[in-house]
Image 1 (cartoon, rainbow over the protein chains, first blue to last red):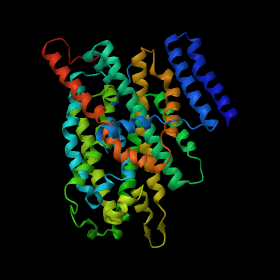
Image 2 (cartoon, rainbow over the protein chains, first blue to last red):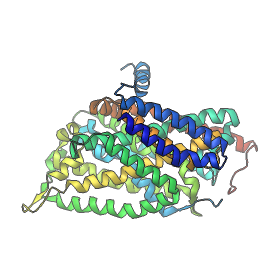
Image 3 (cartoon, one colour):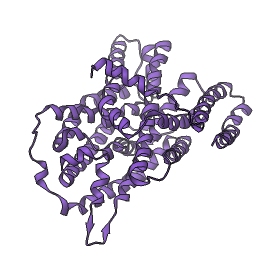
Image 4 (cartoon, rainbow over the protein chains, first blue to last red):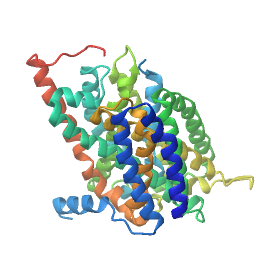
Length: 69
Length: 367
């Protein structure tokens, strides 16, 4: 699984990120790079079977604390 | 760059397929049991004023999307902070819809397949569609809408022998409370989610009023939604509808005519995938537009792939199991979505009206 993730990200970076670098669109390149790092981190952790805390849980507890359910 | 345009008819179809989304298959208002159809009607009535607010915002700033409007109304800094909310909301909504699909395949259609797989493929499909642009989405919806309607119509004809009108009684046995509660759920789950179209309908090529597009979408969806909810109750009964996770699928799976026409529930699964695809694509499109406007990017297409992947991964880590999902969708979501759907649009509209009256903003121009 880990190898699969790394290979597919190499493929995605080659197809998606490199053209932006070649066209010298630095803003697009930066934002895309940041998003790529984020999704790669999540995908890598998922492939290692790490339990990632869900972003929904804080929302849930916030709403419950407001409504008092 | 030539601006992409969709016609008003395509806009209506897009709106209807978006609202059908995943909601109809999870059942509208299961809490209200046999009164769900009344709840659906009340929900539509509740949605009328809020749809007016969205349409008013769009007609005030013709040809501009929600992020431009925020920038104009709130100024550069505050506008960008509020825009963050409208980036997070479609991202989360899209993830929820993808997760619906994953749970549907995992529990009902293909239990042996890992859940990530259908979600990933739905993500790829949406990325492809959004890369192609909003015009392609409009044309997709024009093709898909008749398919969905025909499947709904044919299955409605086929369930006629199974209708049992005794299931409708007793009407409002538990009082009006659960009905109003479910009406609020329906208001927030499919109907007021059309707030996202504030970012899509800037591409609308219309000389007719935007109100007409919004309201015709709402009324056609109302007809489909009430009909299908009523059908669910008449075939299955209120108690079963409130327990089953995907009532429409269960209902159609009961069809068995002459030992020949049976197991046609896969047709319902088809409509589920089609409408889910449209909904995820719209959510992804709005998120990408938002991010590109926030950072002042050259083109929103440069980030579509990564945003789509982020959506799929978020969907995967979001809930632990289907019970978690049902709990969030029916207990928490209505209150969580309220700021995005009602409070912020009302604030934006009020400030916009005040600033227009004071002569600080120019309106009515086509950009």
